[in-house]
Length: 148
Image 1: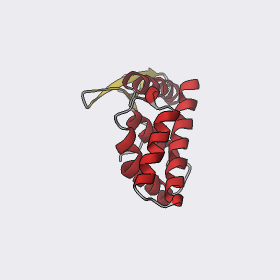
Image 2: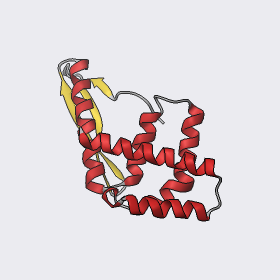
Image 3: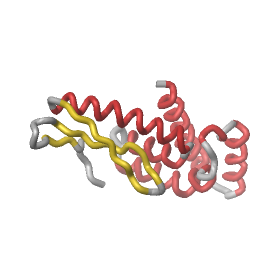
Image 4: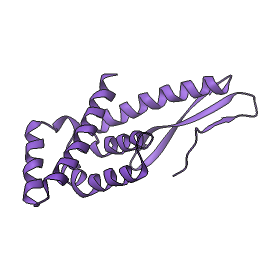
């Protein structure tokens, strides 16, 4: 994965920042912000990214995208081995069950169905607990993102 701020100085002397504005039919549409200084362009870009991410999640109700945003946020806070474990839990258990659900459709009843589905898989109680820790963290992340 490429890392960086995507902020460049243009020939006309302004700073240009590029951010992901939306995703249409699997293709990324970029938006651009401009500033007189690097810091100004960075601040504008960060504000637009935050707004665009919220807008994309709310508009598409993509639980999967929310999971990846949560994982990206966590990657700065925890070790790589933890990120690998979270990613494994997401792909093996959480996304297969919740992928077809809208974010608003995830209720206590849905989570109870998920709990029953995990019990039918005969997973250990520790594994089920780890899965629910990840799920709870994702849902708290969503609540925090939408309350700002």
